Image 1 (cartoon, rainbow over the protein chains, first blue to last red):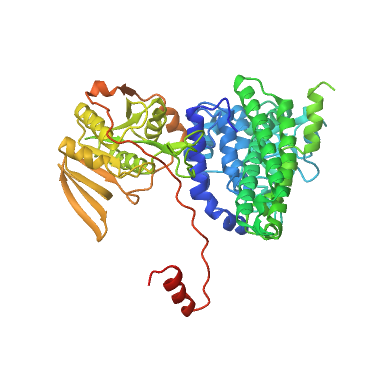
Image 2: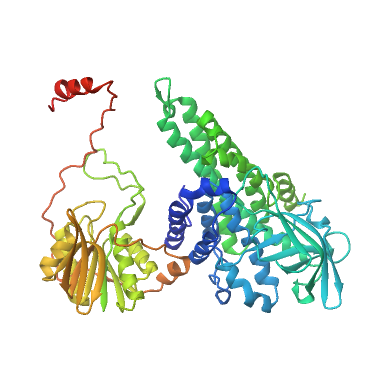
Length: 380
Length: 249
C-alpha cells in the first residue's frame, strides 16, 4: 500500500536494506537458521548502512537524527529475509541503545556506543527473569550498594543477543518491592560473577543467540548505575515503545513474505487441472491475507507519523502490536494451508514464519498485556 | 581528473513489465522505477576511481523529466559529487541523448565519460557509441576492467572471442558491462548527505540541442506465449517429431 508520508530518502533507505537482504541474507537464511548461527559480518554490514543509528547522535557513530518510518522500513525489510532469528540477532542491540545513550555515563558512552552502533560489538537489554517477564515491576534480581560498587545477584532469561553480547543493560532491584525500587545497570561481559548459557531448543528464532544470564555476586562500579537509583521502571517502559514498533514492522515484513510465497506457490502448483491460484477458495485466502497486510501497514504508518510529530502514541503502539501479531498468525496459518504438505517440511520461509509467530505474539509484551496496557491508557 | 557518469531512470529490473492495452507502449502506471543497473555500475566505477585518488570529481548526469532527479540522488548517495539534470519531456531517443550528453561534455570537459552499455528498457546499446562519434572521443565499450594509465585509459572489453584490451587517449568514453564491478549499497548517512549535494538543471536549449526525434514507436506487444514442452519416450520418437511435427530435419 502507498504510504502518504513517503519521501525520496525513505524510499532510498528501504531500497538499500531490501537489496542488501536479497543479496546477502536471504540466500543463506535457511542454512544459518538450521545452523543456529550467522556470521558477525551481518552486524557490521548493517551497521555501516545505518541500521542501528536512529536517535543516536553522530558523535557516537549514530545518524544524528531519528525517523520512525525509516526504523520501521529497516525492521520490515530485514524481517522479509524469511528467518527472523537473524532479525532478532542483530536487533537485540537496538533495544539497549536508547538507554545507553540517554542514561549511561559519558565515559561509557564515548567508549563503546560507536562500536555498538556500527555493529562491531553486540549489546543487549536484560529485563525478563525466569520468574516473570511482563510483570516488570516485580523483578527479583538485586543490586546492593557496597562502597563504590553495586553487587548484582539473580538471573535473566530470553535475552536476545545475550550469548554474543559484549555489553548489557540490566534491570535490578535497588529498593523496595514494586516499580519504584528498580534501577538499570551497565554490565560488561567478562565481569567476575557474570555467566551465561544458551537458550536452546527454541520453537523458532534458531539463528538468534538467546541467553540466560546469571549474576552471582557480580560487582560493578557505582558509576555503572544508569540514571537515578530506583527510577529504572519508567526508562524500561519508555524503551518498550520502539521495541514494539519494530515488532509490528517485523510482523508486516513476515506477512508480506507469507503473501508473496503463497502467490508464487499457488501459481506453480496445479490441482484438479488448474493452478491453485485459480481456485476460488485460494483466491479468497489471498484477498484476506492481503487486506490484513494493508490494515497493519496503514496503522503502522499512522503511528510512525505520530511518533515523528513528537507524541509517543503508547496506546496505539500496544494495539498495533497485538493487531499485527493476530494478523500475522492468520497470514502464517493461511499460507501454510496453501502450501499444504510442502509447508510442513523444513527449508521454506512459510514453515519457519509459522513457528516464529508466537515469539512475536509473546515477546516485547504479550498480546494479553498489550490489551491491558491499551485499556489502561484509555483511563479504564 | 573529472569523471562524468550518465544515469538513466528505468523500470526496476525486478518488475515484470506489461504492454498497455492499446499496444502503444509499456505500462508505466504505478511501476517501480530505479537507476539502470549498467548505469549503477558506471557510478560505482567512477566512485572507485575517486577513492583511489585517480579522479578528483564525479559528476552524475541524467536526462528526463523531474522524476529522474531521484536517480541522480541515488548516484550522489553512492558517492558522486554533484548532479546535472537535462530536463526533457516524453521519450528521448539514443541520438538525442547522445547530442545532449555531448553538450554536457562540452560544458564540463571531463577526462572520462562512463555510461552503461545499454539501458534495460530500450536495450538499444547506442548512446555511448553515438556520443563517441559526435564528440570525436575514443570509446571502450563493454568494459570489464578500466585502468587509468597516465594520459591513457586501458579498457578490457568483453567480446565474443574472449577479452580484448584497448588503450584509449583521454578524454575517452567507457561503457560498462555487467562484470566490471559490484555496486555498493547506498548507506543511510550517504543518502542524507546526497540531499545537500548540488544538482543543476539545464534545458536542451541551454545546451543548444534540438530534441526532435527521428524514431516513432509503432507498437508494443508482449512476447508470444510459449507452448508447454513434451517429454519424448525415445530417440525414434524424437526423430519422428522433429521430422514430421517441427519439420526441422
